[in-house]
Length: 120
Image 1 (cartoon, rainbow, N blue to C red):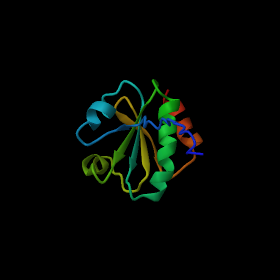
Image 2: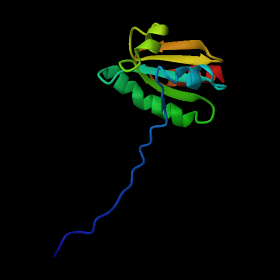
Image 3: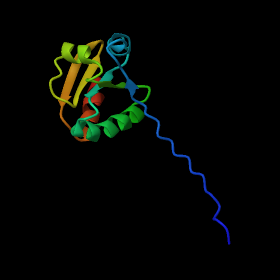
Image 4: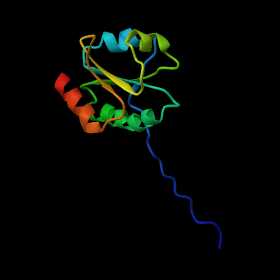
């Protein structure tokens, strides 16, 4: 009888959000000519794990229009401190190098989309 034939399925799970660090934050976020979303998160944060997939969806939805980034606050404490990030997830929305909007806590994708739309 033998074994059934193997079926190879390739699943693309490409993270589209850009990982930013203390070292590249100015170049990627502050000097961007497009609006930028920065998701401040940490691996141990439950609500961050809820927001993470939404941020990835937004990166896909707004590709070419908005720069979508993520910053691990544990690995990059300098930038988090500079912008007063005390609770995570916190999402900052930048336009022209300045903070244009802010969202603290887990929220539906529609709220994040409306904040991005306001910057376009």
